[in-house]
Amino acid sequence: MSKSPTISFIGAGNMASAIIGGMLDSGYQANDIWVSAPADDHLQTIRKRFGVSVTTDNRYCAQQADIVVLAVKPQVMAEVCSDIAPVVQNTRPLMVSIAAGLTVETLDQWLGGGMPLVRVMPNTPSLVGKGAAGLFANDQVKTDQKDAVQSMFESVGTALWVDDENLLHGVTALSGSGPAYFFLMLEALEEAATAAGITPATARELAIQTMAGAAEMAGRSDQDPAQLKRNVMSPGGTTEQAVNTFEEGGLRDLVKKAYGAAFERSRVMSREMADKQ
Ligand SMILES: NC(=O)C1=CN([C@@H]2O[C@H](COP(=O)(O)OP(=O)(O)OC[C@H]3O[C@@H](n4cnc5c(N)ncnc54)[C@H](O)[C@@H]3O)[C@@H](O)[C@H]2O)C=CC1
Ligand SMILES: O=C(O)[C@@H]1CCC=N1
Image: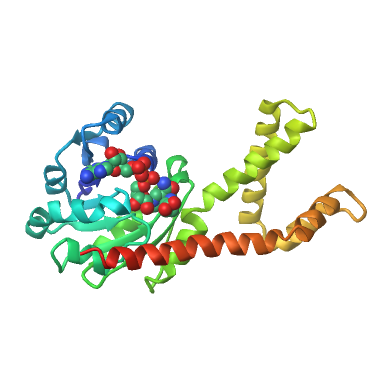
């Protein structure tokens, strides 16, 4: 793919918006991007916000593309794929799915077989260029296509390949769902600080800056998170009290349990969807 590829998104929701917003910020051109969805407010919102081309016709959208990104909910994916199958079997773009729990084998069957397919598990911070995505390619994908999809997801954050598709369950439970875990932590910290008399606005600003600062520091430091944590814990001080409270309350087990629940849901979705047709 020497010229900049035309990229069509089928689906105009949270994740498509996050990826498109990040891509445009990093230099992709709006006139290389098409988006389709049913005639609803999502489509018009995305057109006004990003200046991309939109259509309610999935087949027409797919037909424009070198890369088709399937960005609909897993539950409607079978219908969407069988609708665009005759078009993509003819034009043979690279197909990219961002859906949780849908294997390349299932998607390929729905698309009529023999398609080059990349499965990506991205996350919503792509919108601010801080996404984290895991990628897996099937055997039909050529090196230049792999490079094109890697560039696309690197333009919105970190993009790492896995060589076993099953590992994407673990990526989904880590970075796909992960932003929600940290938003939950922000909510809880804000609630606690507000109850202690700090204004909600101040509590939010301090909590967000603390989370962003800790993440940045963990990324740059050669010390591991356990040591960085110890560096904050003065003996006999305040942090020790809080950290001990988290440990005694079983935070680690709870995190394992929550991670496991997301992981298992991804596996169940794969099995259910494989049985669908
Ligand atoms: N939200 C997230 O944090 C993440 C979502 N994903 C995956 O991304 C996919 C999309 O998720 P969201 O953007 O959150 O969902 P969403 O509900 O925000 O967006 C879905 C979009 O699909 C459109 N749509 C519905 N039926 C359609 C059809 N027949 N043809 C074309 N478009 C249709 C809707 O109008 C909407 O614009 C899912 O498969 C999900 O597993 C993956 C990683 C993270
Ligand atoms: O909750 C979900 O199923 C999707 C996949 C990862 C994040 N959101």
